[in-house]
Structure formats: structure tokens, C-alpha cells
Length: 123
Image (cartoon, rainbow, N blue to C red; front, side, top):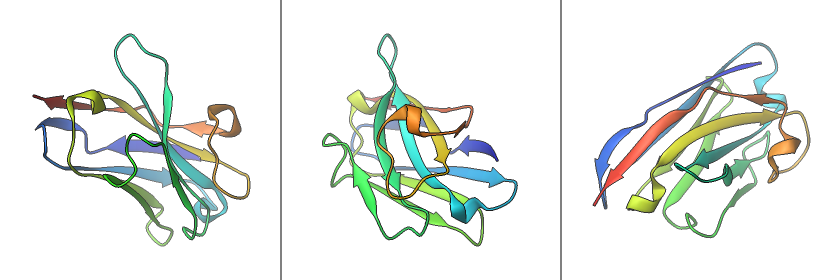
């Protein structure tokens, strides 16, 4: 499967953005999906994950309550709605797909990665 992330941009603190991850190829609904991010000078970190059906989601503590992950299997697309953005959310955001059950937290559980989209939050 090939993944294409989009929707990044520049936003003021307190604002919102919605990221999209479009998948090409077969069997998108078979993949657990996730979002990771990498800030300048830092390691890539987990942000949110969603099961293949969309029934189960999981978030890192720093975004829980502000970000919402979702998917539309009919459109082969995953989303990350980001509200109440903070300067510390500034990073390149990557989407990933893994052919495993449940929600996947570790980056080595994922099989495919998108190219990343930059989110910049100004103070």
C-alpha cells in the first residue's frame, strides 16, 4: 500500500488543522493505521492509532482530548483532526499502516509509511 499525507500548514496556537492520509492499493480496511510526528532535533514519536475497523483508537497523553483520529474505509483515507494546537505540536507528521490486529503503538509494528506533512504552530 502507498500512503500520501496532506493537510499540514502554518496555524496560530489555539487553531485547528485536519490531516489526511490517502492510501492506494488493495485492502486498506485490513490495515491498522497510525500517526507519528518528528519535531526538529527530536526522535519520531507516536501520536495516535486506529484499528482496521475504526472501533478502537489510542492517543499519546499529550494530544488526548485535543486530537481525533478517524478513518473512512470506503474512501481509503485516514484523518487526524487537531484542535487547540500548541507550539509544541510543531513537527512533520507521518501516517503509517500495519497489517496487524488492534491499535499499533510502536513504529516497528508498521509496514508502510507516508512521506510526511509539516505542521507549524506559531505562538
